[in-house]
Amino acid sequence: MRVKCSIWGDRRFTCTRVNRSITSWAEQKREEMMVILIITISTAISGYLLLQIVLGRSAESWPTTNGSLEKFNLRKWTVSSKFPSIQGEAEQCVVNVKYSYEVDGTVYRSRRINFGVDKYYLSPQGLYQTPEEVENDELTKRLKNNEFKVRYWPCFPSVAVLIPGAISKKKHYTAIIFVMATGILLALTYTLALK
Image (tube, rainbow, N blue to C red; front, side):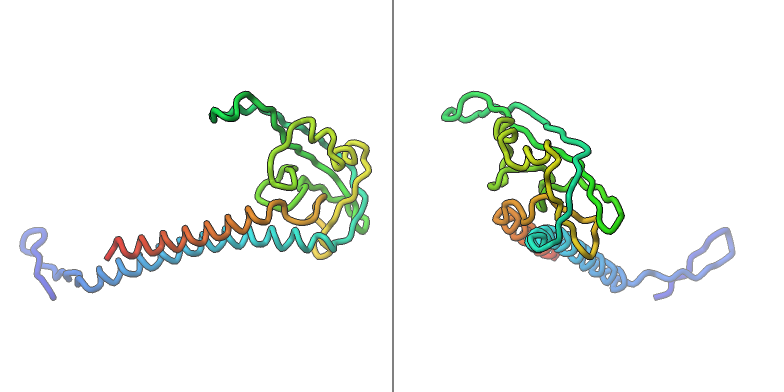
């Protein structure tokens, strides 16, 4: 539809009115892009978590080399419970390390202890440990004595780990399912809310 508009006195310009179908098409494309974005983000997060499990499992067969400890840090904090059945405070900690290792004459550095969401050294159940548990731990003793092996990925030697396997696989699988379900629900909710 064409409409004549008068601008600056007697000069006349022809204006084109925007068709409503073009506007609705643009809104539909915006909605589709938003749904694709939500699903892409949830898929990327789930893919990262799954990659941690796969790399952890494959690290069990990676070659090893001797490691050299560069930094050992024990970060401590105190937690208290608000539950009446568990009174008192407890001290927990995480171990941060930095180590170097050599592969084919090249020195690499890493901070990774294990694959997983947490980059800290946790218990096999995926929990934080007390300082006493960390001090009595076999890996901690080997790290402090500089008698530890580093497993490195043969394709990319800069990717290394001290403990193969993913800590708390059940937590990873639960997180993958939760992230994917949340992404799908958000996408569905977004599309249904706009209709």
